[in-house]
Length: 200
Image 1: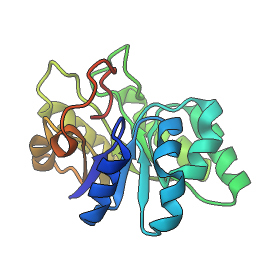
Image 2 (image 1 turned 90 degrees about the horizontal axis):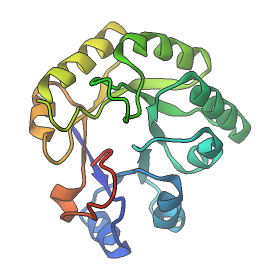
Image 3 (image 1 turned 60 degrees about the vertical axis):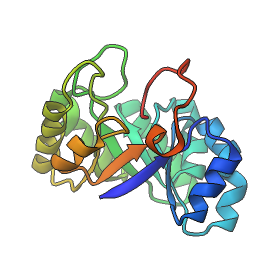
């Protein structure tokens, strides 16, 4: 199991402290904030891995491709098109996860579970490297059934990576086979709660 340290809204001192412990895998929710956090540090920390764990607009695809090693929030064909085009222009292949809206919540990003297989195929056909799946269960429901559903979808698509579990439910996620957990507040303390919850 791999720990993704979620650094959104965190100050530079917190990032430096995490790097000092040897942590090298970080998750960010917004492209612009990630650029402010990591653009300079990337050149000084060659083994750094950055993962986008928040929703992505298609007009930010090129910026995301330039900064992130993995985009965990691919949830629609239009975004797959934009990422594939940006990756081709940059001369690189892009690793992605498909975000599945396991609770089918209208306010939340992610492809509906019944459409996940089709999006996996579409992204692969576009030349994206689909490594696995990601989900954020509904806050008011037990997370276990959602993690089980994500694992089932992953298995039938031959996918090994499951990014699931945050500060409040990562232990449950690990029991259901999470390969990556996204932990922010448990590492850095509580963040500004005026933000809309998304990926810890």
